[in-house]
Length: 230
Image 1 (cartoon, rainbow, N blue to C red):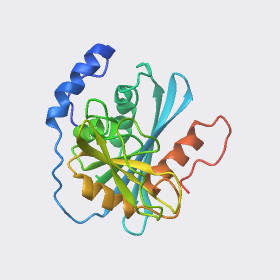
Image 2: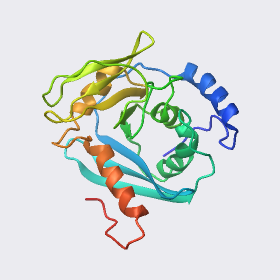
Image 3: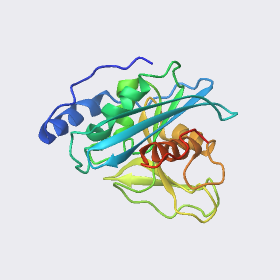
């Protein structure tokens, strides 16, 4: 898979903020509805404070058959700073996407899209480099307020921040805590929510990112546990 080169990653936190302020103007939330045949789920797990493994699983849709999976291990140099997660995790994830032989139609990321203090979370940042429709699906809220969504699976309410709608609190199974969906790049919020609903299978975390999370968790474990995609 081809990856765009938009900026260097070896930067200071202050420079990283300026890069975010520049890149946010390049985001597009316009979605061109096309057949979805390949969906990617991406996540990263830390083996130690400075070493991590990134994983990308490519699923055939709607069968959810795994057609490809890639991983990358490396040392992480950028520190953990709230709001700058993409500078810590995106370089390793991009190296992993670059290994894919096929290009996903939709990318799900365990992180935020535009529901971010500067409007460009991990999913948005990755989306710009991948130039693919990208959806952020996070387990916790970073910014904004929302009313409690309906208790049924698929129920959602809008997440607002400073007067703008930036995402949705989506109930993925009956009466469980919601996940937070936001468009990353090349997709709008209604489409991001609807596509996430198509990925629900009775668990709190939607299938693409749940499977990616499980896999990198196994890969980062010091034990010789199974490292196959389940």
